[in-house]
Length: 126
Image (cartoon, rainbow, N blue to C red; front, side, top):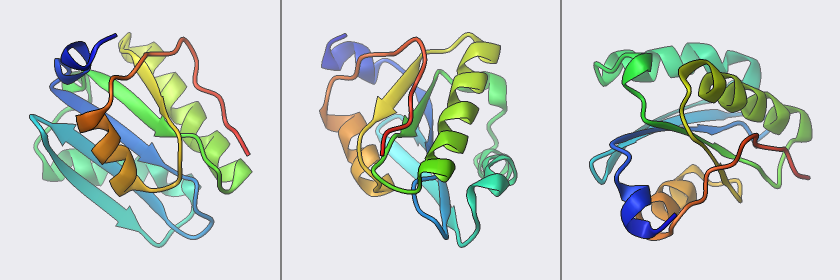
């Protein structure tokens, strides 16, 4: 997949559950992004995702792809984000991208600057 192909995805939902005491979700769209980071653990990922989608007036079926940060970080938290990304990608029949690292800002930057290759199933690393 080339950079051109990566940028063809209009709306990419990004999960970051690598930190022990915060969970972040971002929506990257048209070269811009909106993020929501809360001081809660990964079990609140769905709630945060719903809040972000509501604030951007985006329905879940408008998502073009799902991305997840795979660590390093909290292994259990990372697995929760990976499981959510895999499930959402499978349910919506959308591509899944793994983003290395533990920084939501870094992940959003890599979405803009680096070609990404979709994976069949994301995996957690530690």
